[in-house]
Image: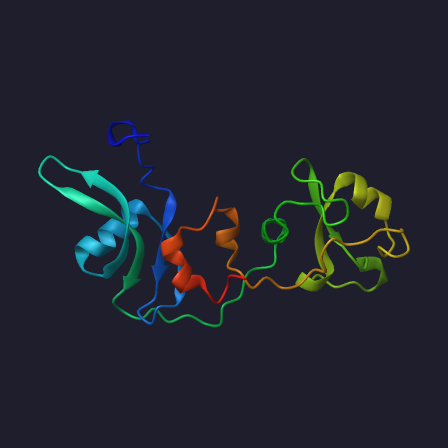
Length: 178
């Protein structure tokens, strides 16, 4: 695709990595929000995406990574435990048979009726067929194996929805990447 054939930018898409003043990852921002933060002086652009916003008189580079100039205080990073985040952690894949997509459910490895807790370590993504097959039993009792043991996610879950991490993000995400 040449410059004249570039796809139009979705200004509301969360495609810019946002870092705190101390270079900790805060999350993603839209192109529109990140350009406004840079232009207002609230953030600095650490890396450009190679794309530009064009006005009648100016060409504005679209950031890929920005760093806020003021420290944003946050408590300890805690990813909410909910259905969407369990599906994201498991990459929308049944943890029993490996099937992707379709009608996915969240299964308690140790059933709630037998004292299983609602924790990251006890919840997995399962297709409807596997969830029905397992029923109110443990995977061992049902003759099923987990593809991966469930655990609390280390990787910020917003990254799991991206189709590839831009190379210029990697220095800031090295604590999360394998």
